[in-house]
Length: 466
Image 1 (cartoon, rainbow, N blue to C red):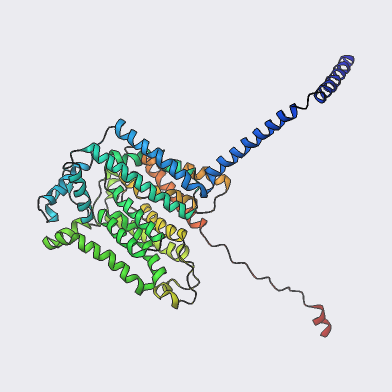
Image 2: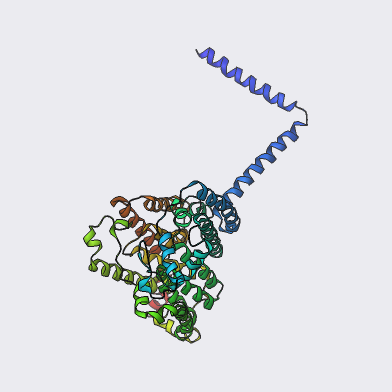
């Protein structure tokens, strides 16, 4: 056995020596072959590095956004042609605005199959336009294509916000676009008014980012007049206006919002002011338990109880106060200093950057979502496009990307569970709670550096002096 092992080793040494001598005798042309292999390897490595940067570096968001918008155009056309349309509220919308077209101005007399008209006047004018554009609401396919265009416009506005903030890695946008069945359904298969309100809201946010606050407030008020869920952004907007202009400078912006609401609702206010205000701005409206997505694990009597509603309102107010005091307000002065003119403050506030504006508005809306009395399936669009920012606006390590993507997936799964279950509702609250926690702890100011403590040992020179 030992002899056999020795022979094997000697054979291997001889083979290695022969291979080295053979390689040294190769013609010089093989050097170019090796060079080509090295060039190809370098190109492959560069391609991998480029793909990694395209997926992870926010500076490539415009390129990724353009590709996704083109893909989304095809996806929406495919959905419209292949997936059956589902009638839920469209016919009721058309019946409600048809009453206006027939001359009815009393809001209490405007009704549809699903009940009375409960949206402000902006909804009436916009959907009255859709009523005439779609042949009195009968051309459903044309309405679907119009909503597909609204979807793409909404996507462009959202991408423009994300380009300005440069926080979210581009690979996340795939989950925000092509991977959400529920959002495509809300836009092009159900034709709800929620997407119309949100696209106007995102247009207002883009104006805020450009420092055009008057136009932004006008559009914000228009979005509120389509559906009142946009009011969830109002606490954040009020904070930003006070921070930017102070109390006196803020009043003209608020007047713009109020005047638009008055102008839009004037025909109905002249006919029946109480009927218009109580119908279009009914904050105490009861929701049906069978449609709730977020409170399915509660008994129905608790879900409908006024004490539960008051508790949610108090929780919402407490969350807004905490975020305003400790996360939105970063000045050394009291938050009451926001009432002063910015030039009169002891510590002038830094200029409002894109991330400050977006963080305040999106977190304000999210706090309202977490404390909502009920979330219906179409309400998903209220905050879906803000979730990537809320998750990635805080510092993210390499290992933290996967849990955040998983969180997005679980939220999507909860909204795709029909009818909602105890498990899906609880899971949705757990996900919302995790997003709130990472917003709270991920945006906390780092502790101030402590000055060095004086040494307890006395100076030897002082001891000698003693």
